[in-house]
Image (cartoon, rainbow, N blue to C red):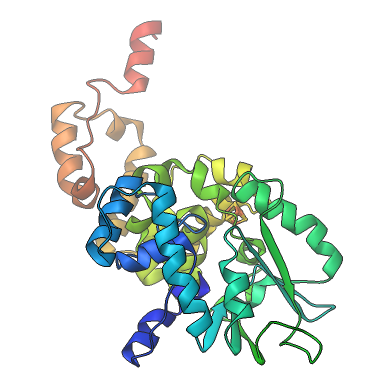
Length: 346
Ligand code: SF4
């Protein structure tokens, strides 16, 4: 995901360097020229038939291959690439501070092959991934696998502490670790938002989010989608262009409830909204509309005025922004106050 964040593939392509995704889901997405749909399962929106059609169109295979056959096609192509590639690039799930190692967790063995065959291994990893000690993996590995994919432990867990040594048979001749900030220190400086850096990208908050489940990962238009994406993107890339993500939430709190590292996600969404207002990121018309709403709400005689059709017409003509993506507001013929008075005849 971090190489998605910095658009590494596009950059390499512009410099005529071939780069191939080796995770099967990422490979499918790359073939389809689409970004990942989900931070853990990038092609989860595609059926096996979609993938068979895609392979047929891009790789010339029969259009009705089974998932097993499709996997073998991808494996055959990728295996040749591992041995021919000059550079293997991986991310890291954790950076282990006491041993100076990186820990990579995966289910397909592709990252392990990417750092075993090529002469150079480059790790691109966000600075928030540092954990104090090797023994902390005893907590984080099972946490990531159970919350991420429901496995007790992920299939391949590698700890890499440097390039190949004289007595070793595989591994790169050179290894580089690139620590990516890209806005993370500005989150760290924010005493409220800094807890979003605890995220281990397990994807659990996406899986339970009613908004993500309805709109899907691509609608966000961001590298990180779902609740965590809506929390961190406005802080990484600015409220001006991404504040809307914090508003696209029912604040049901399902994300907070499920988060493997107990990030208060829905509270952080609220904090983002507050920050965007404090930054003055709202239109004059919206500010005026809320002022009128507040004035009216505080005065019972105004609230009870023109119920039903008249109120519908006035309010819907003022709140045009609301109507752009939603149905019109429809007020009842009587306010709650009037209904209460009717019922109890006071
Ligand atoms: S915010 Fe929590 S639940 Fe969501 S991806 Fe990060 S660690 Fe997982």
